[in-house]
Image (cartoon, rainbow, N blue to C red; front, side, top):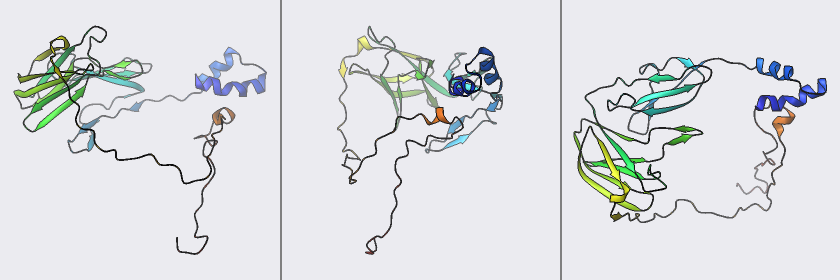
Length: 248
């Protein structure tokens, strides 16, 4: 643990060596308190609203991750929150049961049976939903490989397009809601054509400065454990002034 590593030098300077009792002493002084989790609603206009109280997420904990899955198979997503030193929280989705959904289960070829990297797009009217098949969301964390699309009041979608990581493509038209659509890569006969590449927004330029700062290989936190941020990587300061009096 970092707290042990960074305090070893302190105990060695006092006692000459680090004993198990010193480690336990360090760990006993670590603060611990439950904090509230946060969950946000996507407003659909590039803004999000905190819904902790309205959605029942007020229980305190030291959480290290969360995954979503339709645990009760009722068509909406439930939430599982992993906690430190206490059982996991399981939140059942009790939202509007009249809303419709579509689940997509991919079956890839040998070596990638879950279809990792595939892109699934659902089209309806002048709208679309796109989901990448990439269930891993963090270190040792994964959501369900079953892709979920919320459809609201829609009872069917115009089409579902699957672009596999191999470059194959298949389109399924007129798909009804409230079911699991099984898509097999072995049935794909089309080839996906990438859209025309857009001109890049940025370009690489050479620095106008005549000097370059070489980073220092110094661990500031080992020297002083109470530092908020490292100081040895800041580089030299830069100042500006109208030195020649030309107004610039």
